Image 1 (tube, rainbow over the protein chains, first blue to last red):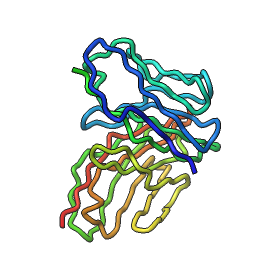
Image 2: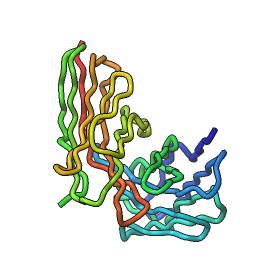
Image 3: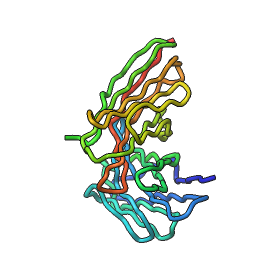
Image 4: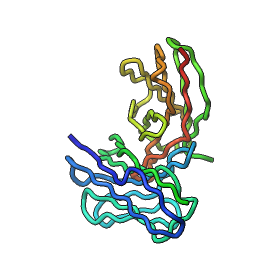
Length: 114
Length: 111
């Protein structure tokens, strides 16, 4: 069965510090991978998605970046965090077949920027 | 216009009642829709997916899709306090490989 791992689960970072969140998927190959952010009391905002190694689509201009160095690895980074970067970051994967398929989430990483 | 819209609630129903959650979408080309449940502090969990017009039932849950009206709904029968959560509606947008979420509806089931 497929599993998705995301870490760290919780982190507190000062403004201006770097960020690296990592996500890996097991039990599948060539998944579509996604990074979502959820601000407190808000919905899910799609940040990045990737349909293959080295292929990154950015949805929202910001100081974040994403990379996919391996088929089942997706990394979210920032060189300098802002207060507004605080939130719940969720990695997700899917193997769409045409217009069907399902998106599954990792456990999430809660980031607080002080 | 937001691509997927939901009433934020909260929607309060008594235990044992039917909870009805609604969602509208703007992209007429969207074909696939999903309902997720999210408990406070946790990641979303997939409850139902629906791809064609009509009803789809799974246990106490029924998803309904009306593409002509661009409307998706989720019915929860015999609501339990454990159903209290935020319910997220999502649609797969035709122009890309991405799932767009509504802001979510808070459901509270009172015992």
